[in-house]
Length: 358
Image (tube, rainbow, N blue to C red):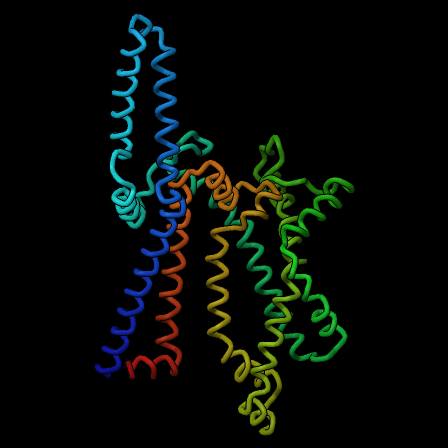
């Protein structure tokens, strides 16, 4: 018993170290990419210099100074500002500081972007956009997950039926992304029929009544949800149907049928139970994936979420916001994977055997 416990703790420690290393590497790579290896800092320096020189040369208080004196003053103010921003140090040195700040969730302040309340704190900007993304994409992903799960199980019972063949035939629809269908849905239901809004989170001006406000949000969610259902429901249903069919052809399932066990019992005990771990994994990762949203889909529907924020940060080269978003997602993903690993090590005999042999 002690040996198994020690092996389990050793396994947990290894997974923890591995995930920590992966998170550190992922965040540092994001820092390098978001700053373009320090190029963004050079842009900030140039913009800071232009701003200070313009301010000094246009300020009436400095009109008595000569041109050379104004240049010296502007250069002094520029150096002070650069030191305050920490841009006087080499990028490789500062990147280490960025990494430590990100790992400690000290996300700092955005360079250009602000929250609706005017805050430049990255934490506030992300917190303001996150609920919209969670609302839309958690709804989409959970709907897709349960439709595909129930649909796949149903089709595995109706193999080769007309409905099964129809789903298999329609599964290539997923070769086109959801946002592409969204454009056509906007043209049909918003531009042509006028039944639904073009995009956004809520009507403008927003309803004052809470119930009407909630209905307005639901109305704006219809098209993005439907676009993803059209794009991905058939392929996911087909995938899970194939998954269940593979398990239903195992020898132990045939043995259970030969014993005369009821079909529902066989399905629950010998098909659903073995498929539970990968289904749980997909479910957990689907929920975490909801936090990052989808950049293009949010842009198409003008949805004010994390995806739109990421796009805006990339356009404005606001590296603190990009790093902040990736950091939070990396932590969430690492925690989820760690929890799944531990759960599997506890409940899955095969993993326990692997742990004992480690």
